[in-house]
Image (cartoon, rainbow over the protein chains, first blue to last red):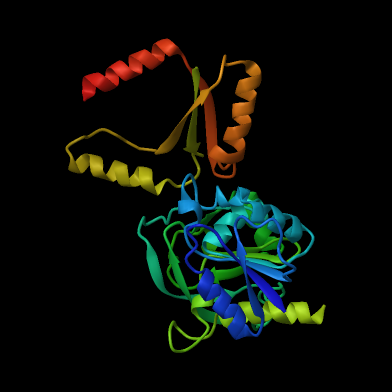
Length: 223
Length: 96
């Protein structure tokens, strides 16, 4: 199984994301922001970092890169896409996910091992987790405050599209402590914490993050 | 050559931590009586030829597509007249 990981100019976590894909048991395929095709991959990860320097707004310029044109078209056809941190911002700017991510309310960069609750384990990217599983995954962001208008937040909650929520202190001012959401089809997931940094005991807070990658493999295998 | 200005502001209901940080600094510098600060972005677009209605519509499209995120931001488009241009650069010189 081939899972693509896009590298934009300014991506930081593409190598870790490819490594996580390999640890989970799939073949990572490096995709470049200038690519006009997805090389036949069965899922795509948009990694963390500061794509195009995050000038203008986080993810605003990446959204118009050639590879994102392909990702958006394929995602609307059901291709599994996971956007992590900057990848989540890109998914929101691309309108694949509702809402937006703004500067942390306390104005400081946050970097910590973050407890989360998996609120929806029925998506392509979360099906390996137990319902309401509590996990610890690395969180590191400057602009991770999830915002959307009240009707959108109510819609996300009502349709079970909040897939992960921060436990304990809200680390970045995200409305309703939202850490991750999915689209109506459950194939596109945006997540502010970094599961690719929590896949082995040697470095990071444990292996709780691996489930996002094994979930995709599981979902694609079942098809 | 004409210049068109696009100003982008966070919607009033969206928290503006940068504006808050600036606001918080003012009393420390001895500036009192400022009740709120909101920080935005200003883009100056230099265009070929005259500013026509068509051009302005196109620039609104640019503002909506790239310069702002309509989920969290509002924008305003205005034309900078050559006279204003001179005036503003004079002010700039005077300040330096």
